[in-house]
Length: 195
Image 1 (cartoon, rainbow, N blue to C red):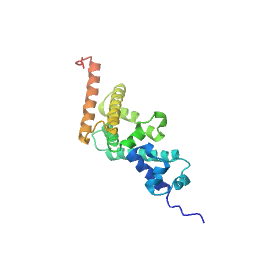
Image 2 (cartoon, rainbow, N blue to C red):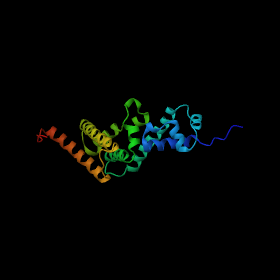
Image 3 (cartoon, rainbow, N blue to C red):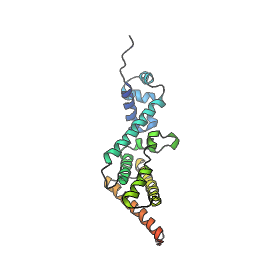
Image 4 (cartoon, rainbow, N blue to C red):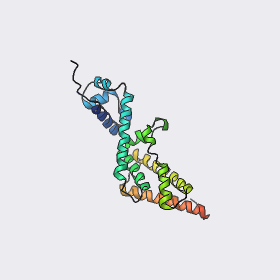
């Protein structure tokens, strides 16, 4: 009779995921995962063909964690646009290694699930319907806000900056107002003071 399997696939994924949360994706190797669950490397390779397969499952779990942040924060703000931005910033703040794994990779390395979080069309549609912006204006606002939010999130994830949730909310509001004001000035041909 074959030996009883003591460690299930989910045990191994959970151990690798916790390592990634604490130290990043590069911390995942057969020895570190085995050490985390208290076994030899043999059970890992009984369940997974290679470490890349295990890392892919960890990445799926990290993407799911981001989905959880979106769900948890969907009603935190007056608009879905801001709620999504807040979820993104809070994920970077509270799960910096996971944020790095999911969002700070070369686009070719990102899993399909991450591409699904490109809510560009939905955001633009929402801005047009709720705020009365033209499609072109909504696209410009979204692009500026995306660049700002991504940059801020990257600085939070790398611990170059630290803000409270209220401060992050205020930063998003200020940037949104600045972008909209600049857009209005451009369209009305008003001259902004030099920077």
